[in-house]
Image 1 (spheres, helix red, strand yellow):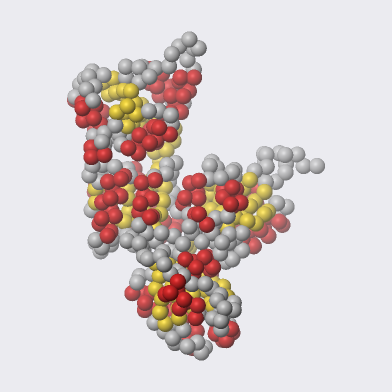
Image 2: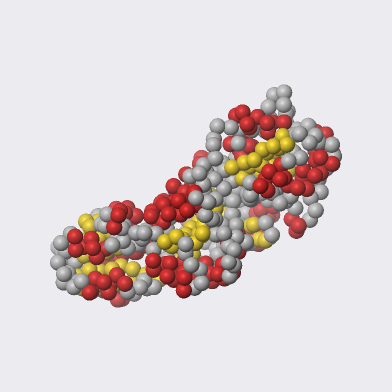
Amino acid sequence: MDTPEQRPSTVYLVGAGPGDPDLITVKGLDLVESCDVLVYDSLVSADLVLRCPATEKHYVGKTAGGHAVPQNETTDLLVRLATAPGPARIIVRLKGGDPYVFGRGGEEALACVRAGVPVEVVPGVPAGIAVPAYAGVPVTHRGVSSGVIFITGHQAGNRKLELPWGHLVGSRLTLVFYMAVSSLPIIAEQLLHHGMKADTPALVVQEGTLPGQRHVNGRLDEIVSLAASASIRPPALVVVGDVARLGQELLQQQPRPMAGKTVVLVRAEEHHYPEVRRMRAAGARVVDVPGVRCRARLDDPQVRASVETISTDDLVVFTSAMGVRFFAEAWSTATHALEAEQVPPEPTFVAGSPSVARALAKAGLHASIMPTMARSGLVLEALLEEGVEPGSIVWLPRSTSANRQLPDSLESAGFQARTIELYETVPVPMTLDARSMLAHDRVDAILFLAGTCVESVLGAVPELVEPDDRHMLAAAVGPRTAATAAALGLPCEVVANPPGLEPLVDAVMEALSKGRG
């Protein structure tokens, strides 16, 4: 009989739904929020990935023209994870749409079963039903269409799209093509060639169920030029049939101001930035790209000694949420190590911005001083306005790569600035789909939140500094980040003033709404 250490883990093939993270099933979300290992692809919402607390996550996404991880390596990975020595774990393979509808979930399930690995499928809402519905189109309708056929518009290895065109036309059913943007000219040509009427309604939906959803509809003989004129990009789904005409009557949702815009946010791997929700709400597709990974240095004797030295008379200034996170861990350890009769010190905590103040509150540390929104980031001015006496000790928990501007300005004003290098940042390998989007200029704006993020991106996509006709808008969270980008050959047209993510989001949304990018 297998012991817990010998029993293989269970693999759950979970459908994430068509794109909107709220459309995942209750069971699917429960598994995502409780699993030990997450394996996910590029069609899965970043919000779902961020909601997963698992410390072990594997990205196996794919894009047209390449594979981040070949399919056989993905199936091998699932088997290897499930049969690794140790206690049984919950392994979630999170897939866009439904695992068994053009998701190759059957291949992964068979590989697990043949290896003796328990596998369970959690169906997802298929994009072929949900996306047309969000565009006002029921894929079946009494008296119009009695059935629907789901078809892949993409052939592996760039093979010719070979389908039973005559049977499809003769069925008189609704035709829903997945992954069909690049093959739309062939689809329209073949359907017309095999007898479908030129005035048959057709619909193309980009980023269905997401805030950036937009669509074009028209006659079959016009749909290719309409989609090209609207610059429709993947991911998109094509509906052909009389039901597509109903969308003009049933669709209530109007395109949002930033619909169709793609914005890349280059961020720290460990942190989530709610400030960009406004972009998603306005219709933009916001792609989270981890640019750097933060490694704690809490075991460093100098770090421990610095934290233990902080007294009630001191100030602790935070300029990043990551600094808050690692300091909170170190502070908890230091205060718990005090003798029972010792009273923990109560220094004055200072937040460099509203987002940092929120991070402090979440960590159970109250910010007594914070610059106003209009003066976000101006820490020295905030201290002087609050009447903090020069000569006070000001601790700065930060990254090893942080520059000397703030501590030097504090020293010049008469404060005793002492840095605590709590963590270091290292580049994160960029996924193939993100690299492809940037290299082929399929991004409207890129937001850099630190100079190290600029370095990481340009290390992965050096061609960004070359073309003069690039339409992508480069934006920096502040002058220091912009200076790093300029020095590396990528000038930023938008620089947040005052520095901070919220002002940066405001500036980028304004620029994109005026047609820039």
